[in-house]
Length: 88
Image 1 (spheres, rainbow, N blue to C red):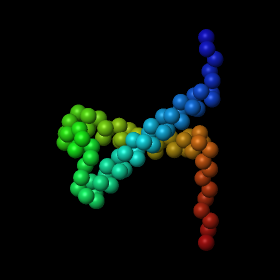
Image 2: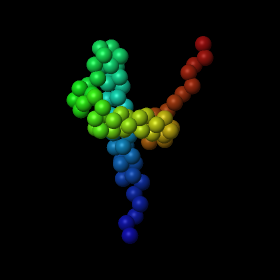
Image 3: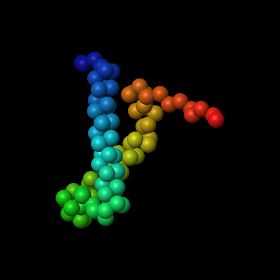
């Protein structure tokens, strides 16, 4: 039986984090183009209401939910430290 390797697990989770970040970035850019120029690149490439278009929108939605639910563990995994803003 193979031993559990926490470093390998962290590496896999970081890869998932990067995939999620890529989906969120693509979704944000898509909505930015829709808002600014009334141009939807996903629909232009894959069709207005195709199965692939719907799948991409669902994946971006799941990516957002994953990021919201796991934000603290993602920060911990990447060594990000949140500090309270200074009071003026």
